[in-house]
Image 1 (tube, rainbow, N blue to C red):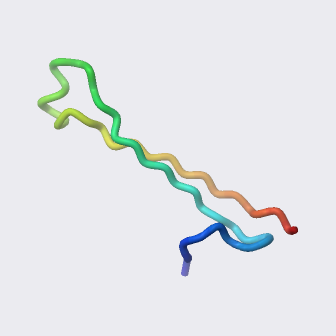
Image 2 (cartoon, rainbow, N blue to C red; image 1 turned 60 degrees about the horizontal axis):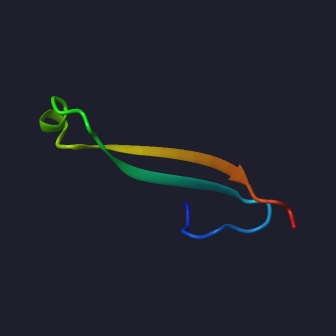
Image 3 (cartoon, rainbow, N blue to C red; image 1 turned 45 degrees about the vertical axis):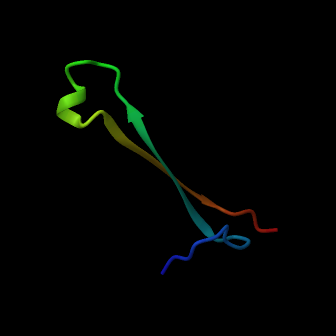
Length: 49
């Protein structure tokens, strides 16, 4: 099970960022509620020291 935090040496860590993108197109705003939720994730292994 995962834990919140930076992780220890050699551990695998998942970083995720989320962002609500505001649309500027007039026709699409009412359909999607004005924003599109965007998300990106990256998995890395911490340095062993």
